[in-house]
Image (cartoon, rainbow, N blue to C red):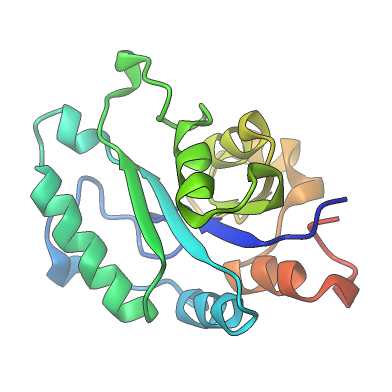
Length: 180
């Protein structure tokens, strides 16, 4: 089993409160434990990235500059991550980068210089876990109120109650929890 050498986070619903099509940095609010989770991973010497679907760009509801401003604000609040990647396409575009396809995970792994199999992807919906699987990485679901109950049941064996618990398992292999 490959040791976790990088952690990739979904943005909305995992690190920050999900504000649909948010282009306003003043509306960025960290979720409980998010800053602590990023700090724990960084203290363990692991590189970090965000991989996020941002279809609002493809829908014409916000611009790439809006997403970049929101990402910069989130990065500031989180204490700094190594890379921020997003897919600007709509679901209908069929692009290889939109989760649940593997493109974002593969691109983040390459940018961080880590094999995909050594990455842990932490997200709040099944598309995050499925993107990890498609890329050969490990995924962990951190469900929230917006996560479909069927997704929670389907991925219960690879889930954590919160983002801090999910990454604690990655940096402390003796914890007995995910990601084995």
